[in-house]
Amino acid sequence: MTAAMELSSPEVMDVFARYVVPNYTRYPVCLVRGQGSEVWDAEGRRYLDFFPGWGCNLLGHCPPRVVQAVQEQVAQLIHVPNSWYIESQGAFAQALVERSFSSQAFFCNSGAEANEAAIKLARAHQAPRYKIIATQQSFHGRTFAAISATGQPKYQQGFGPLLPGFKHVPFGDLEAMEHQIDDETAAIMVEPIQGEGGVNLAPEGYLEGLRKLADDRGLLLILDEVQSGMGRTGRWFAYQHTDITPDIMTLAKSLAGGVTGGAMLARPEVAASLKPGMHAATFGGNPLTCRAGLATIETIDEGNLLERGTAIGERFRKFFLELSGTTSVIREVRGKGVMIGVDLAMPGAEIVQQLLERGLLANCTHDTVLRLLPALTIQDEQIDEGCSIIADVLRSAEG
Ligand SMILES: *Cc1c(COP(=O)(O)O)cnc(C)c1O
Image (cartoon, rainbow, N blue to C red; front, side, top):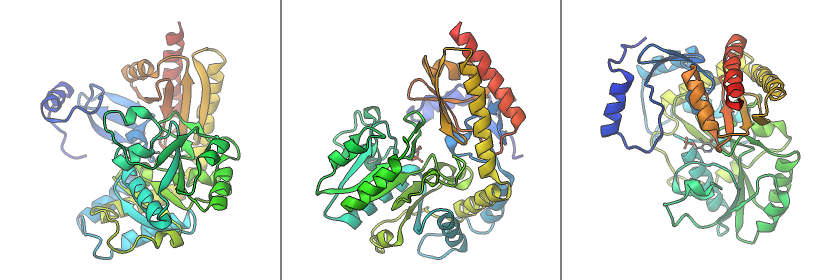
């Protein structure tokens, strides 16, 4: 372990109050160390983590192969720009493409950036068509193109005027989508499973229907798999629960085992529309991220973690379904693999606060949805430990 930081949680909070932009609501806890599905704060308290890294730590905290790959790489080459070749970027692109669809990868640093790349590519490829139809309750990130694509006004308020050309239709409604298509439409953009919007699964046949609409009308189908991709749902990518493929797919969050990174994959004929000089990301595809990403893929392959993710999801699902029989607080249980949403009949923020007090980290999204994005490496005993805390807290919330 690296040298411990010296300050207590309240002392760190004082420094933040003076020097850090206050754009986040933070829990009054300073985390210092993590291992798998456990983290410790500056006071030495242990927490069980059902939401490691806001979905970025798909393998839990400090997965050994990722740690080792980064430690090796950081002493060899930290960063080289994209004016040179590096072996790990090619290998990482190949590994992603071999697990998805016939495509090529562009690397950047975040989900919003991956979506920026997708939107720019869609416009460049489809010019002069420029409109993109997205869905209500979607989330695509915080840059201007990404908030324009996002179908939730709360993320847009105060920042207008937005990028023109975006329309939003209800998620799951093929007719509404078809109705919005006109001669200027370039692409359809959706998350196969809406994450921030409340863990909303696409209804049966929806993605297939979008694929057909796109083919019939000459549109590109962009799938934002920033949250659902990389094994989160028990397949490498959530679209693989269907038999369609996208034209463009975006990735980030879990892409590199918790190390920052984003990627856009596009069919080669589409990717060819980005000519040298048209788009770039200085840090994109750097050696640390690519080594971490390769180590992430190896860890998932060797541990059969896609299957394990499905089993973990089943264990959670069984627990919540049983619990919902004994309390009226649970309205619906949704999810796939280790992407789990529990719609509550009450505000979820209070529940998350009480879970924190009991030593369990979780998340609330869309006001009432308790969201869990546990690691693929979580142990059954840890699942059971956390679930019994959830059961206690939900039962007492009802009373
Ligand atoms: C988190 C998220 C983003 C934004 O990713 P950042 O890395 O925060 O820019 C985009 N799309 C989806 C589906 C996400 O869940």
